[in-house]
Image (tube, rainbow, N blue to C red):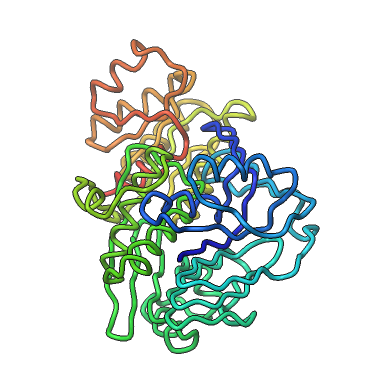
Length: 396
């Protein structure tokens, strides 16, 4: 049988709107419920969230087991790429006795309110902690075969290394892992075994919903590698495809391997260059938008030209030439068209005249107002996170 062990939490997001009970454990069990009929969920069942847990069981057909605890944990996001506000705050969350899990296949996630001591024939471990990931066996967990799925921050904390190939080899040597999947954002994933490493791509999606995308990836890899016995590189590629579909649709459970393999998806080919932020910044809300875009692009390692930061306010005869020179030095543009600020619209036209790709965020706007934008082959999207990702993907 197969057990997913992980947290079940309340998740709320302002834009796009989301208000539901999932968490890593609930989402992963839901993701593989169609193709792994014997899957079960082991979690700390918070009393305030029991209706949500029951809803997961009813919709996806698995059983949730584990002790009842008095306090539920909530994650609140401004958008799906934002750092969430966690309540209670992490340092105030009560720690409970470890969950004891024994099964043929176990997918174990890191949890805020405790840990899980696993005994498995095959285990997949996703620590889900950017700042304090714990080794799989530290709490007494054992597995005859072990796969680790980590992002670069988690892997760097565990190994004190930065080179991806060295990270993977270190984890294989020191953690007893048969497979290491190192997730690298737009650069896809590096899949390592004792015989070597291979890269699998990330795949584009028309819209990008990030909450839970890592949960789906780990669940899909568990299904295809640990349950179905596929090669780890094939399993990682199928997991990447399943994640792309989830980011576009938020739909669970995931599709079968044959269905995912047949999808015509565009792999992400990482580009290089600088992105111009075209946006008004005349009030607090507009300045917040510019700051947030600049911050998120910075987290992705992308160079940015921001008129707010790199030029600043001033008379038109001073700032306009400097702003347009900044456009000329960029390879892509993200434009905030909400409110149709004349300066932003002018910058969009200038970029398109220079052949620079433009991704435009347009919310609550009339089609008539977007006629020239659409007609000049700008890509128009309706949410901030999708705009950020598509701007990065537009870099040559």
